[in-house]
Amino acid sequence: MSQTVVLYFGSFNPIHRGHLTVADAALEAIGANALWFVVSPQNPFKRYDELAPETLRIEMVRIAIRSARHADRMLASDIEFQLEKPSRTLHTLETLKVQFPQTRFGLLLGSDNIAGFSAWYGFEKIINEYPIWVYPREGYTMPQLAWTGKLTLLNNVPLMPQAATNLRSSIAHGIIPENELPEGIGTFIREHHLYGYHD
Image 1 (spheres, rainbow, N blue to C red):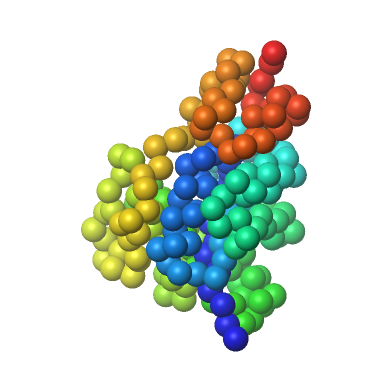
Image 2 (cartoon, rainbow, N blue to C red):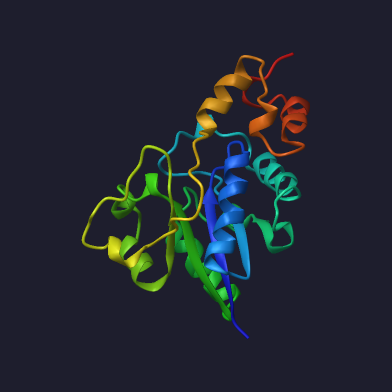
């Protein structure tokens, strides 16, 4: 029997409570069997030197999932660690389709990604062959483009105001905003001195 898996791509640099809130709400709204956090080792649209090592970022995702409402239906995927860098979403989707032929995969994207989505490698193939669910991001509205009718907007998913950029800035100044991070992530950042953290 086939199952539906939502793929939540991101650098998760670091993962924060907003990511978990969106993931939990999206699972409920879509009614999918599972959600996989696909940790990107190198996003072609981001500077590589901003990223913590991928092995540490995926470990943070694994820790964070434990405090999610639907933890039993979530996992952290390292599929892109095994693929050519920088990461190309279409390559990842095609690889997963071969590995899991009975699974229907779809993408979960923030509304901030939609305006630039047509610049993604193989974008037309992605929108024609895979369902795409869009969650709202504060300050970003859905552009009215010829292809946006193929997307499903998740109106019941909460806005995600937190930005990992702001969290990294606070951490670099020695302040770890525990209330914005899933349980255990602040401790992990301290132990590994990530994002310029200093006592």
